[in-house]
Image 1: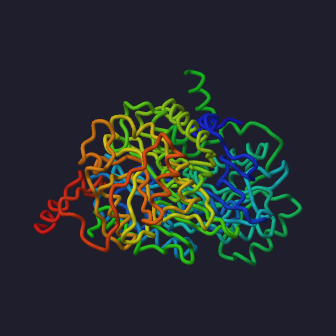
Image 2: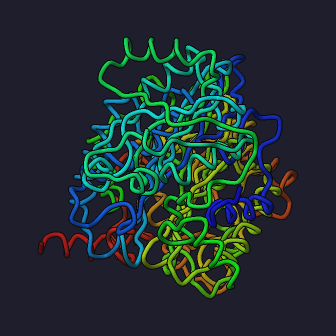
Image 3: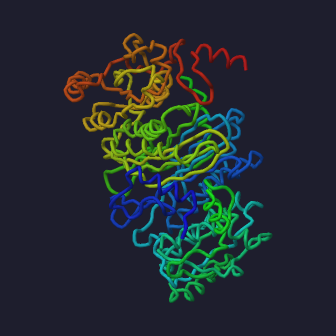
Length: 309
Length: 309
């Protein structure tokens, strides 16, 4: 299965640097997981970022941009089944932005931090010549026995998604609730074999989970739950869903669905397909957002382009 | 003593967010220090950043920029007396930069990581419309009993700096060695009452240490060790020195100087002044680099400007 340009670059870059050894999880999953000296507990480490005109516009309410900046890495902590702890906020401020922008932005950070039990342990600020950019680093913790990665899936495991996908740009991307409760509950009850958050779109993220698990996948596209106004293509490629993608062994699936309904009656959990033995993605499978390749293309178009270059 | 615009903004922003409680150290020092569940050990958390045309130029060797990106927060870990552990690298890449830039940059990150015992546990990449920007988050650890902060100084403590100050722009800012060994040795031998790294220039950073310690300061400007080509003003205001500023109780000072010479024969440790009871900074005391106020001004000029506005 082909990796997208961003994943290929990441893979190339990691060859130049030492990565953690004798640790449960290094780069390449939603978070890194590091032993902390307390037996049975792991520290989760995550960094995420947003840039003007890529993830938000100057015209958006800065408090909502702050909310988004912190909730994005919270979604990654959720995808490991973890609980968040401390955040560090780094921002780059262009000359045409004044301190009042950052005060509003921090109100949004504060709102999210209080709601999800995060404290702000530090930060850094710098001028840059143009455009607002923000990086958020987040720590978390999890019982080692509950850690959920992308790589635990097996052929035959059923694939579920929480909530609805697509059309995030209409508003969801600025006010979503990271699936922390759901992720913690799934991890604690050991239903999933693998889990990740859907941030670049199912089109990019499902192949990542499948590849990490050494599997292929099949999806019933009609069954993908879509946000109002989104078509199937949008549900696969729009990105910024911040929902959980969960692989579940078949024997656990019916109990999971029953218990889920009782625990989260307002949130959908939809079976969309299954992991398979390794196989290429369907030829018309669309990618999601790729920072080093531009807008989504189908594999077929991408392959045509690659064969020309 | 007046805080600079950047410190004032930081102070204002922190009112909007929850900060760590029941933890040894939250925002406002070189690093945060957090209990990790292992008695006697603290985790250090630091984020730092560099932006094109502020901290480096497009024409600089990307490997040296990578070295700098990681060594800057290493200097903060050094200032606590700590040992570094994992780094997370976030970069913002404009359309006119291609992946080869980032490969060279990561070579520099890798070189620094291997030299100082850091592993790269994760990262994030995003497009942005213009300019390169990088944020590095770094963890570290330290025995709780050796933690060194900015706030432990007392009136009468003598002030020392390592190495030489000023003129960093000629090359030092891209190839400096963070003072990890020196910081760890100072902390372990409990010589200092307070310590910080000098990154914005002594002009900004000494008032920060004095303020955090509830003190004033006096400095013999002629005694400040200067890098080749730097005048006194440059030694105070150029910034990017990445040296340690150390406050030492008078009774420990002569033993420190003797032991230092034996341990670090090639590195200067120079007494430059002392902490005093609280008092305003000298009227002609220059600031250092301030991301929200522009180039350094003397206090006198700054006060004149403020009284007009």
